[in-house]
Each structure stands twice: as structure tokens, then as C-alpha cells.
Length: 352
Image (tube, rainbow, N blue to C red; front, top):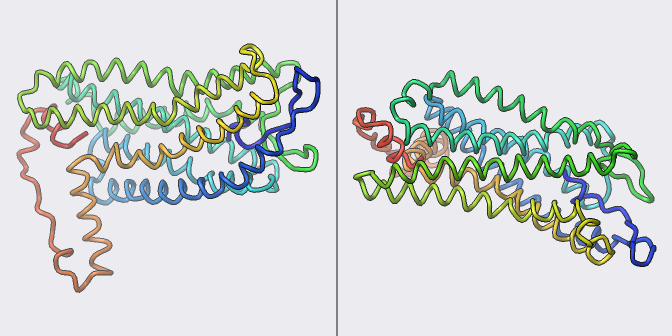
């Protein structure tokens, strides 16, 4: 969890040289964040669990895209599993000990960074499939998907290590906290380094990759003869881009403002309190993106919806709707001709 979200120490108001009280910020967080975090956890957990079950049971992980979708869902689940603990923390204080504090912080950021990296990999995967269809036939294998996924998890762990190492639980005033404690003589360096790492890896890098890849994809789609499939794929592409940046850009902007308060002249008490409140809202908004991932990466695709419907019939309807024959009918299989078309056509018809 970011230090600017759950822990608001009383800062110094440099205009008056008096302590800046953050009591109101903590009270708002205690009333607002637990129910919001609970909703994010419930909807995100159910959605991503359905993605995992459907991919494993129905699609059988037969392509690189399936491997990346599975790992994206696992990243979101890892991220989501820490949220109940942050909800508990926001409601009062941290009373789970130092080990849990460091472990959950590490898992939170591993899920955060790995989710971003798998979004990038899915973008590159789609680019190769549509723009470089011949090369994609050789490169987009399940083995390549597994190897790149393992490397991605390793990079995510490395990216999360500094935050986990510097975070600890300790008594601060009347309450126990779980927050970063950087070395005193290097405090500003580490604080700014952590912020720039999140902004570069979480906003700048995916923006560059998406703009580059989707520009090439759009040029290819404009030459596509199938108008219906072309427009559907274009809509999906813009949905992915807009939703990701809509949910995470506000958080990155507030994080930058909060980190560089003094340089921007925002280090007075009123501005500091407003930034803390804005951080609560924007990080919660960013968290909800993991609830949207199952929709924009999986449920939008027609083939995935048919797989999900088949999973529901096989594992749910047969046990709970035995008197509902309409639910028990087998979903019609799509013609095998999908495998005889070009890779570009397959990607477009899948909605992915």
C-alpha cells in the first residue's frame, strides 16, 4: 500500500511552523475506505476467478494470449487478496505485526507491477498477431508465453522489493502504522525514486507501448476488408487504452504532486490535507481497474463468452438448475473454419 494512502503523519505547516493535524483525513478514510475496498475485493475476486476457471477448464491454455490472460487474472487476484487487510488498517490501526506488514506490502506491489506488465505483454501479443501475422505463427507459442510470463513475474518481484524492504510496522504516537521508513539521510532520494518508478512503469511505459502498438494495429485494420470485425476490434482497442489511463492517470498525477509538494509550493497544511484526500480517492479508483480487467480483456470477446456459457452449463447449471432444460443445452460449437483463416482474422473474430 502506498504510504500516502493509509498513513498520514502530522506534518509541519511551513507557513506557520505549527504541526499540521491530519485527524480529519484519518476519520474520512476510516469511514470511506473499508466499504469501498470491500466492494472492490468482492467484484474483482469473483470476476477474475471466473476468468481463471474458464481459461483452465474450457480454453485449456492453448495459446500465448490464454497464458497472458491467465497471468493477468492471477496478478489481479494477488493484488485483491491484500485489500481486506488494507480495509482493516484504514478502519483503525495496524495490529498484525511487522512480518505481515512487509509481506502484504510486497504482495500488493507484486500484483500491481505484474498486472501492468501483463497488460503490456497482451498489447504486444495483439500487435504481433495482427500486424506481423506470419512471424506470429512461429513466435506466439504456449512455450514462449510460459517463459515470458515467468520472466515477468521475476521482474515484478524485483520492482516491489525496495518498497517491501523499507516498509515496517511501528508505534507512531497513539497508533501503530504500516508505512515506509526510508533512511534519514536518503529520505528524499528514496521517496522520489519510488514515486518515479511507479509513474514510469505504471503510466509512461504502458503509454509508449500502447501508442506504438495500437498505431500499427489501426493502420492494419484500416486495410481490413471485413467492416464489422474491423470496427469491433477498433472499439475494443480504444476501450482498453481509455479505461486503463482513465483509472490510473489521476493516481499517478496526485502521487507526483504529493511527492514534490515542496518544489511545487504545496507544502502548506491545507494543500497537504487536500492531497491526502485526493490520494484516497484516486488510489481507490485505480484499484477498481482490476475489477474491469475481466470485462475488457475477456468478457468482451465473443469466443470467451461462449466458453464462459459452456462452463456455466457444465459446472453450475447441471447441479443447481436440473429442471431448467434451456440452461442444459449444449452451446453450439463454432465452425472449425476459424482455424483455416489468417491469424489476423482469427484475432478479430475472437474479439481479442
